Each structure stands twice: as structure tokens, then as C-alpha cells.
Image 1 (cartoon, chains in turn cyan, brown, orange, green):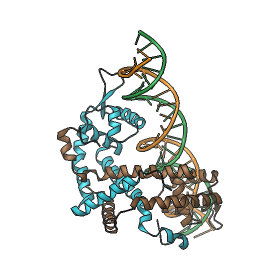
Image 2 (cartoon, each protein chain N blue to C red; image 1 turned 90 degrees about the horizontal axis):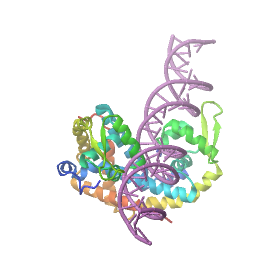
Image 3 (cartoon, helix red, strand yellow; image 1 turned 30 degrees about the vertical axis):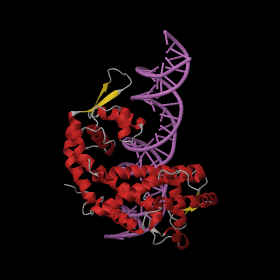
Length: 159
Length: 159
DNA sequence: ACAAATTAGTTGACCTGTCAAATTATTTCA
DNA sequence: TGAAATAATTTGACAGGTCAACTAATTTGT
């Protein structure tokens, strides 16, 4: 926010940086998403969600929808629809479990594996870039504070 | 993600914490949003977006839609719709500019101000809670790294 | 003065994310 | 065994977010 021209008597209670943690996270999150979306769209015509699912399936090949939903922390409903779309797009293949007809196992197609291989160097370069030149110590501190905030964000009982 | 049972040959390239910055941010962001949403919904029947708009208007009373959209970094389309909804809900009042008929000025109603006053202590307590017990030094480092990542997230030209 | 460019706001289309109810298949256990 | 509980997935409804086209009012430049 533009602190410069805000009403003076109100601004005072907002001036400390600590009042802005959540605001800054939201902004950073937007920026990170925009960056990843841009890279994926321009180099592989994949959405961020598709990329995450593909990466997760590289790690957990043959996973069921419920397992996948746990790995990527995504709603099962959203996942169900996304999977249909990705099957239609030729990125996934679905197989029913032989012993439990409720379960379906998910597999990456050749196409998905090719796109993944093709994007990987860029995406890894990006992760490196994001933390380039940050000293080990600072990074450790950073993660420690992050974890602290994450814990505090689970508290529901305030006041 | 559950590193425990991931395919071994893939896991290796994902094992360093640095590969997970963006993942951890996303998770933290979810958790923070859920917390704020819970507090606002249960204590004032406000959505997070409504809260942000109300706070922004406390700081920039009389702002136009375009100004507000700048302050909260929100799409003008989304904002336009949200404002209609908030007017209907009795939270905002709209006035046309006398000299420029295109512009509308936004004002909080009594109700919005009352709800804001009522929620403020909780929301400030929350911000404090999130960073409670984090030493000054660590916080400074934290913000420094955050800023670094924020800068790097603006780069589009990777590889 | 007036056509062209710009600005404020609205609307439509579409994607993502969350919640809850519905459907189908499997398991439990009296 | 077979009714009830549980589990996997689908579907519907709706809020949030992004993009682009559109309308109307104002400003610019000749």
C-alpha cells in the first residue's frame, strides 16, 4: 500500500513492518505465481497446477487420486476435474485398480514426461535464482521464522 | 509432500530444502488465509476480501475505484463486482464525483466502521501472535531474505 | 471545435479453490 | 449373510482471481 498519502491518524497504527507480514506474503505469493505461470505457459503451455501434478506424479508414479490429493494438498473435487482435463489434453492416463473398482491409478503420458523434462532445467534454475546469494545462515534463520509463522497460523483461538 | 515414500531416483533432485521455497510459501499462504477467513467469518461475518477493502478505505477514505484497485492490488473487474455486492450488503456507499462523471468515490457505512472497530483488536492480536517470540535480529534477516526473493520473483528471463 | 486517444468503470468468459452433497464400491460386524 | 459404516470419486454451487472487450466521459492535439 502507498503509505505516503494515507490519512495520518490512521497510518500511525499501521506503520510498523510487523503489521504487514501477511500483506507481504500475499504480494510475494502473487509475484511467484506470476513468474512460474509465465515460464510454464511460454515454454511448455502448461498451467501451474498441471506442472505441480506432473511433478508429483513423477515422484509418486501410479498414485491414486486420493493419494495425489494428499501429496499436493489439493481439494479432491478440483483434482477430479483437473484430471479429466489433463486426460483430454493427453497428459495423463487413468487405470482402474484390478481389486478395488473405486480406485484409479494415474500415469503420465509420454507427452507429459517430455514436457516435464523440457521444463525442468528452467524450473530448477528458477529455484536457485530465488535464493541466489543468500548466505546459509540467513537461509536457516529464514526457514526457522517461516516455520514459526506457520505454526502460529494454525491457531484459531484468538482473543 | 511426503518425501518418505517417493521414488528414490527422483527424490534425490528434490531433497534440498531450497527446492521447496515456493511450495512452502504456498502452504503458508493457505494456512494464513484460512486463519484470517475463520476469524473474520466467525466474529464479523466478513470475507477476507471485504476486510481488506474496508481497511484500505479506512486509510484512503473517499478513494475512487481505480485508486482502491491500486492500493489493494486487485483487478478492476473483480473490484467493481465486489463493490456492488458490498453496497448491497450495506458496507459501502458510493458517490459520483461532481466534476468527473466517470469517477465514483467510496465511503464506509456506519456498519462497516462498527464491524471494523469490532474486529481490529483480534486482527492486531493475530499479527502480533504470528511474530511473537521472534528475536529482532531474526526478523530483520527474515525480511531481508523476503525482499531478496521478492526481487528475484520479478525476473522473467530465465535461461 | 472536434476527431482521436485516454481514462473510469462494467461486463463476460474462464480458471482456480473450497465446501458439501451425491454416487458407487468395499468393508465391517451383528 | 446383509444392513450399516466407510472409502474413492464425481458433481454442483459459489467465492476469488485474471484477461479482454465494451461503454461512457474526459482530455489531447491539430
